[in-house]
Image (cartoon, rainbow, N blue to C red; front, side):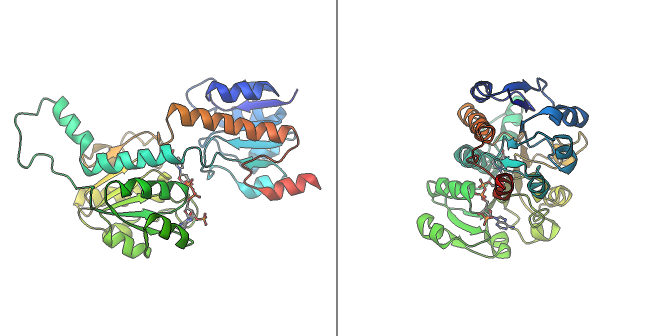
Length: 327
Ligand code: NAP
């Protein structure tokens, strides 16, 4: 029977599906397997189910002579070296689409929470500071009627645009390439990155982490934003230069931020962002609904099962590796 190593306890329906076709070993701890453990475990594996905390690179693939497929339990795959896998004929897959709406819900939650200072207000009440109704107490930014700038208008960006319609927001976007069909469908307006920075009241990031997007939000970008602007990041931490974000939030160059992702994760205990009242941080939970995480598990399992059966996995990222295996 083929062997599958799963690097964390994913929801049972995914594991049940894998067990019908393979001998399945699951890393049982809360923290990811240490690198040496992962390198040892892949040695006799036919398939690996990985998380975004596992680095899938040439060193790992060279340990794994039987490995056919690595199924990432995420839509983002910046933890995987695609060309290293393709060179070695190892198939890589992700879980696109199933987490779009759940992630968009969380992005909108952060827009609302950071804009209206919800977490700060909750801390205020819990600390016993609520004495009376205050005319200037905890004033925030209006969401309805504001201008929302979306960086990246793919699956999740466009799902956030749909939510913004309900709040009567004007939606601008910057995405490469421009998507004129989506502009018509969603009533969103394409602008340059600089225009988006200077015109938006809220900015929500939905691009993948690539060499082009690393530190896209740096000191220069923050200097172009409104002092009332709110930045929300549910994409990947390194897209934002955190030192520059801290300076922008501390100096009042921008008003607030809502972060689901950080660089690194978890943040170090002395990360100064953790001390600011105008930043709302949650621990990378954008796709964390019961239904979505379960669907991600079965989707990752379906990709593994297809590869083990010699079929092309439905969510293959490197079709070249498939072509190579077929030769
Ligand atoms: P997607 O459908 O591929 O959307 C990304 C969009 O950004 C695409 O339209 C893409 O264009 C565009 N783009 C790529 N590089 C760009 C650049 N340098 N400048 C401007 N636009 C660029 O992906 P998605 O499903 O919406 O997911 C987006 C990202 O969210 C993922 O990559 C992942 O890292 C992150 N995510 C995070 C969580 C979480 O738990 N926090 C959950 C889900 C996803 P092309 O299609 O032409 O490349």
